[in-house]
Image (tube, rainbow, N blue to C red; front, side):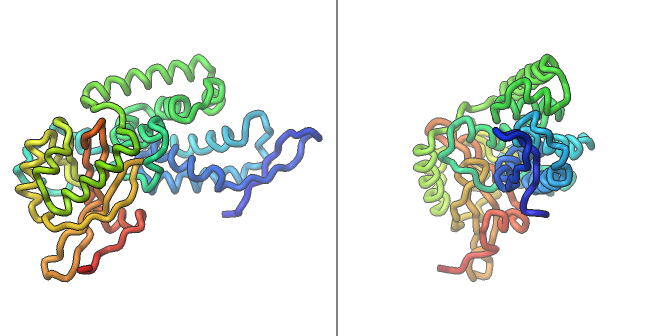
Length: 329
């Protein structure tokens, strides 16, 4: 793809060519498309396609809106095209009720399109920014019709005006506002049904809790882990549909089916604006540790609210810069 796009802008001397680097928009567009699509890989593809379309149609930009709005309109259309098939991505709790922690997870649900974790984003970002990429929020967005989803993200997350959203959709301001209100109502219902645990913990609290969690898990200190959990904390295991809620069932899981995780090592990273860890279990032959799961740990107040352990390490670990295995040291 070319390293630049050429657009037309209006300056003090009239209309002239303006050269803009696409990389200025790439990072924020990936986060936008990730919220829309629920998949980091699909978001990357959508942004690449949007930037290619922007470059090919640069002569069509007439300066009636900001260049950023124009690029977002293209990215929105790419996402709407991708969502036309109608099958939404999900987390285990979107599919069924909580399960007994003492039983194995069963077979992977390979027919489900799972929500992917998003590499990076600074845990020290403002609370609103952190909330907007939390796994539960991204999962709730998938229940909105695509245009309502776009309207809510553009208005409530990215701060676009009603007029800008209407222009993006080629609709009236009244229509854009109506879509936003319907989206807010549906999202509120989803949060109420899910029994949300509130806003993310402050960055300093998350850092301390993450360190305590990593230490307790590495020692497999189930009593300490129990103290760190919110009473209604959840643990889910994509691509398995099984998930658990509450200290008792999570404790049963750790002491039962997951006991093979004893002796694991955790390598810190960041996912969806939250602390995350590459988990490596001891190899059965005693020669180091093998990749086992990417754990995304989310907090509410001074407790752990959600642990999502993504098992697709072959695909996810390279995205997070995590090695396939660890040596004995």
